[in-house]
Amino acid sequence: MNKLLCLTGLTAVLALCCAAPAMADAAEDQYLSVVHRFNIRGDNAHLVELGRGACDAANGGSYGVLAYQAGLGGQGYPLKPDALVIASAGITAFCPEKKPAAYSYMY
Image 1 (tube, rainbow, N blue to C red):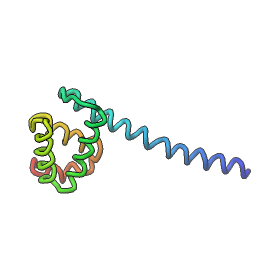
Image 2: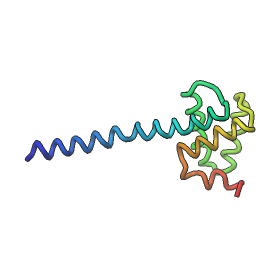
Image 3: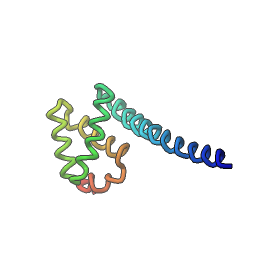
Image 4: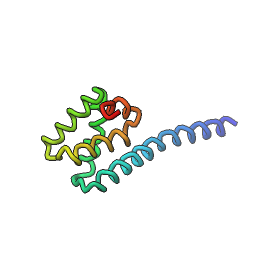
């Protein structure tokens, strides 16, 4: 009985540990699919880093996102469509709960 209980507990812990990376990969795949659809090229790891950076920028609300997009322009990503796509796809994939605050200027 004790072994069965330990085995069940271990299985639950492994399931939780292994589920998180799968969800992260799905979000990254979703994000990269959108970015590549707009012909934005670059190293995938760097593009993901830029998309996740939009979530940090969204902490500052819509002005934070606008400033982030302007900063991407300085890195060689034109504001329209590249910087806009990187930021909006990043927020949608990695932190969708921040969409209303990040894009309040559009509503």
